[in-house]
Image 1 (tube, rainbow, N blue to C red):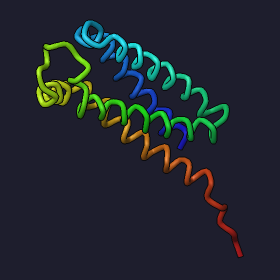
Image 2 (cartoon, rainbow, N blue to C red):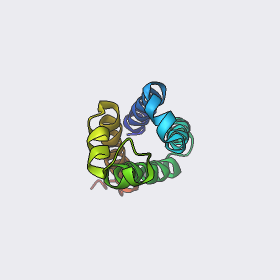
Image 3 (cartoon, rainbow, N blue to C red):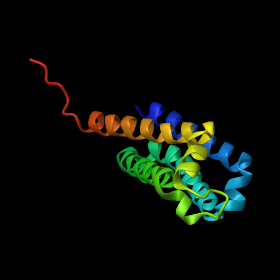
Length: 133
């Protein structure tokens, strides 16, 4: 299960890097969000190493990280326009912009997968071993 979780973390980091590299609007309109994504991407990569060194701790941090990133990205979709310049006059316009960006939607979906796989890994790692008779 560590391998699956590591792959999902790697996908999250790769999509995060893609958004950072191609998201000139992100850097110009919301640089604090860009720096936040840099942080999430670095943590994703660090957690890949953690999956192999301290798996139980890394699994918990991975699930929490996925929840936080999913929450923040969802908050951008629901409330983000209120903090941006007048390019996006309504929250609906900003939400359409974000949900029209394939990389953003993929990164959002990857967080859901990360949470589900992380919870499954946690359950599997804490399951009592089967007894034989």
